[in-house]
Length: 218
Image (cartoon, rainbow, N blue to C red; front, side):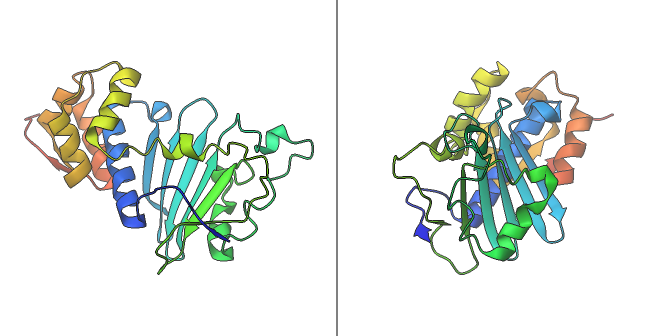
C-alpha cells in the first residue's frame, strides 16, 4: 500500500470539520436532499458517517468506525469510473489493500460501494492516510483533488462557496462559531438565514449534536 501524498486533516479534526459543515448546511437549506453536507452520528453501531454530494453525480462517503476511518470518493466524469469501463469493474487496486474490516463497512447499499474512483483510509495508530497501489500509469484524474477540496477548512473558504451556492450573505463570526465550537443561537440561525424555520432547524441541529442557545420565545 502507499502513503496518501495529498494533505488531509487527521481523523478527529476531519470529523469535527464535517460536523460543522453539515450544521451550516442545515441552517442554510431546509431541504436535506439539496444539501452538500450530511452528518449521521449514529449511522451504524459505533459508526459515524459523513457524506458530501454536489448534486451532479459526484459524492464522497466518510466512515468513522472503531476499525479506523475510510473515505470513498466517486467522480462520475473520471476515466477511472466503473461507468467509463467496458467491464464496469472497479479500477484495479482501489480496494485491493483496504483493511477488510474497513472495506466491510462500505457494503451498505446506501454507500454505493461499486461507484468509486478513489479510496483512502487510516487505521487506529496510523500517523498517515493510506491508499492502495492503484494501477494508473497514465496519471488519470481520480477526482480526489476535486472532492477532498470540498472539505473547507476555514470559515472564509466555506463562505465563498456558500454565498454563491445559496445566494445569501453570511457573517464570518457566526460561521466561525459553528465550525469551531459547534454551538449556535436561535438568533444566529435567523440572522444567517431569515427564511429558515428556526424551530425545525433547531431540531435537526440538536439531533446531530449541535448545542443551540434558545433565545426566541414561542
